[in-house]
Image 1 (cartoon, rainbow, N blue to C red):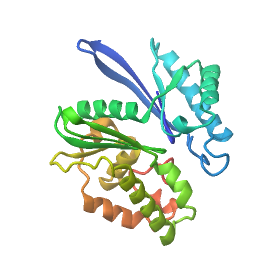
Image 2 (tube, helix red, strand yellow; image 1 turned 120 degrees about the horizontal axis):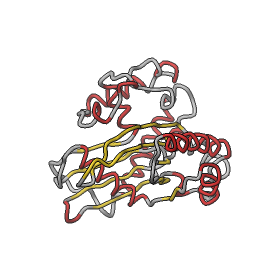
Image 3 (cartoon, rainbow, N blue to C red; image 1 turned 60 degrees about the horizontal axis):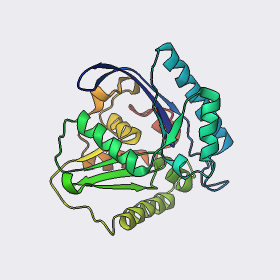
Length: 267
């Protein structure tokens, strides 16, 4: 289980033999929106409504694992949970309501796990690359050569920044410009000490945001989205610019009519 800032995910898998190889049996996700009002009300605290949504979703996950006879459960919290002043209370509530012992992992550990998954899924080996995982509350970067790999976790998340800047529907030009400047600033400050080396390796994105962008560009219906269908798709810069130019002037309702975008991500 992955308890993120916007989405909780469940993967149930069965070991099929040496070396450690697992066959996926079930994948589920729930939009908990844990980052909702994280910075706008009680600063740096998970809000009661968001906690309630997460607990309900995780209770559902726990019931599914029982039906499948799961023998061992791994649950990690990432994103805004790392920063939350009430994170220990949240983890306690998870255990009391569901029996799930979740732990918070650092941005660096999240990034290293992400890298393992990406390299395995795309059969990349150890070739140089820039890998990023854009989430609801943070973005992790892994880049450089194998013997000098660098890991960076930045408080740059789709949901947190949307709540802070995109307060109208559709967003106005000034809000979009302010958001763009903030993203540029965060990246510039974060990589000023350790600049990204230029190389010929691929830029690889993972996570729900990137998956949704790919689904929209390739007009893939949400029910068709799966790792087998999405892994390895190429997104070109011009395609992304064209998509952004179209959707930034749409209302949430208008965006919902686009293939690949589900209701939990439309705003």
